[in-house]
Image 1 (cartoon, protein in one colour):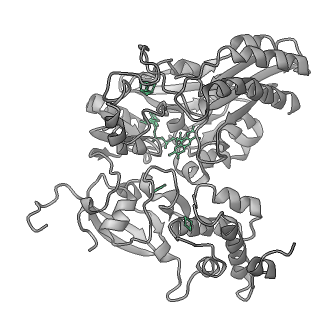
Image 2: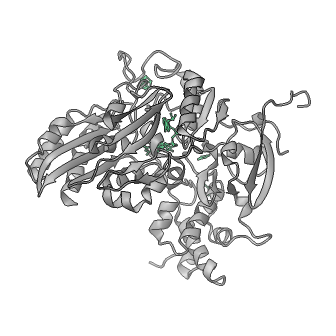
Image 3: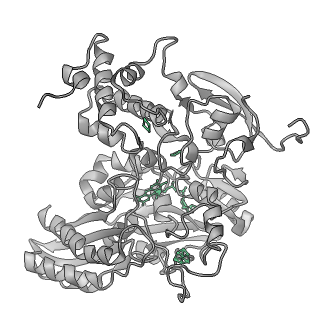
Length: 179
Length: 337
Ligand SMILES: Cc1cc2nc3c(=O)[nH]c(=O)nc-3n(C[C@H](O)[C@H](O)[C@H](O)COP(=O)(O)OP(=O)(O)OC[C@H]3O[C@@H](n4cnc5c(N)ncnc54)[C@H](O)[C@@H]3O)c2cc1C
Ligand code: SF4
Ligand code: FES
Ligand code: FES
């Protein structure tokens, strides 16, 4: 790759990602997804369909879940972006990450970054969402592994833990329901 | 390493373009006029960017409307006629209590679009100007090349109706049939002037030239009719409750004299390159109280104008059959509310 000509007409922008302001140079036709993954090395945000049809590339832009595959990097100038890398508090995983891991809400994990961020936006807005609200809020994120139930249960557990860090999952959730 | 080349990962990339970010409607209109036919405006990008990745459209200049002042938000009163800026996101409309209370039909149509995340990005203006859709068109470049393309883009045959002179790609906007039915008006601005048209005048029954709007015209405002004793509703058929475009949409409107229908309009979406008026069905409702017989008769009459072709999800015959069921449901909404 040494022989490559210098890339023409890159844009230089400031964007705020996970609380830090970065100066990034990238080609103007790049999506935020490409900028994050290729120009900033933040590969936690996954690329799936790249057409808006799966939700795995979801990030928070000014607190709102949006699809990074359908927004230009340069449209994000001055905006506050949160990716999955920004969820944990230092070494301490976010309660959502913790409960997803504990309850098997991530299997292959491909959908997980997007679902975590969509869930975070929901809990920021409604700390006590009923199941229907969770289902609605996550209806733009496809998961081909879990069947969603584990995901809903994990979001509910995280909601409880955000109020009471000691909250535990119910026996039914861990062991199944008796019939 | 971070910052390494683009071609290492297989990704669908946007075609290249120059990006302009006007701050006023006048500047945007002037830029659009200056850049000519190879320019395109972009609102939320949720329709245009996928199309650019599939190389349906490859604009040389993109005029981003997100920083234009005065194109966002809802103003006015329901009784005087609400005015909506085209850059208002679908989520903002959905959360607008006035819209929800005064225009439940529009609210339902907006709420049914795509997914909550896409509604955070997509705008009403983009939805109104949405590209038409077809199973042979909404595919990536390689797929389309493998069938030697089609008339709508890069080719010259229509694979749905090889004898057809016009492309039959489907009008797939959820708000279009509703806005046509309630008689919304659209304000268009170009560098050389402005005009207002009825929503139904925007659409043409041609999957390629599906808008009567000139390419240099911007949609700058959507004007809803004053609320005075009329009701509206929207019904949508699709496979999944999220993500999917309509394969049939029913926008219905009626004004009343007490319980008696004074006037009615029904527009069908996703059965043609433009929203289709079911005029006879609507006329048959005048003077009725939307009693079950009247609803059944109108639903049968709406079956005729629905002319889906085999280019979306589901069997064509079934989609046509469902017109009766969905029109019936819509008319029951109007009676019930
Ligand atoms: C997975 C997926 C599912 C979807 N499901 C649905 C669905 O169920 N129903 C539905 O109706 N849509 C659906 N959409 C399409 C789209 O998301 C919405 O229609 C959205 O409202 C488009 O708005 P936008 O602002 O993103 O448009 P953009 O992509 O920005 O623009 C769309 C077109 O309108 C033109 N345009 C935009 N604003 C103006 C303006 N002010 N003046 C002149 N021209 C303008 C653009 O040039 C472009 O040609 C879906 C999209 C995806 C990716
Ligand atoms: S209707 Fe025919 S011309 Fe139009 S997009 Fe489909 S195959 Fe192409
Ligand atoms: S990669 Fe963005 S929605 Fe699938
Ligand atoms: S865990 Fe595999 S797609 Fe969701």
